[in-house]
Length: 303
Ligand SMILES: [Fe+2]
Image (cartoon, rainbow, N blue to C red; front, side, top):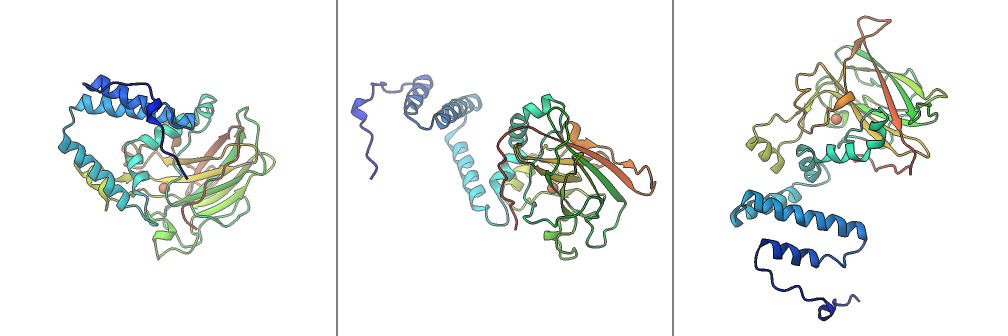
């Protein structure tokens, strides 16, 4: 049974009389918070929220609109869609946190991380190097992708598991599209002794994020385009290394500079070159750098 904290032992904080003393009083109520990391996060959150309300001279009516919006985000979240992640994405917060999380890799010149997104599936078919991920007939130019997984020193990592997945040339993942066969444009590969593998696919197309919820209403107010530029997803898993997910973007996509989730950053934007052996096809080299650490594999959002 949990016991009520004994407030009589608290040092007197006085009664808040203005913004500064109110902030001090609220922060004083956070000093006992455990674990320490939660205390640090709540401290900073309270300081920034108070500063934000002061900075914008937020009215009570506006606060109510904002809280109602957050309630709607919660209600729009279900097994098919996570509206809270979508909100974090369109505000650039998800990309910011990912870039911060992978700063060691970026300092070493490695490929930046990218959002896993909602379309990664468990149990991608395991394919040999050189295989095609095209199960259905896919229109558009063929594309060969050569992947190499390396460590911070540039040494190859063998036996890494790499999942690759993408939308079709019509802008749909196979699980969204009854026209496509199960697991079309998805594959799982194991790196060889040189940390490498290749596969064949087709040029992907961009697609819009879901705009049927409160995040869509926000985008409308902001007069923003809901499109994501064409990309291929990768997630690399190797024992003794931190898991890295990333996305490689097609530089030629018309929405490359207006990715609605701000994921098309730095070296992730790439030119699909003509294939050296087959001028009708395209070619892409992808290098994935992993840093040593705990191998925590996230749960795929879809089975
Ligand atoms: Fe995607």
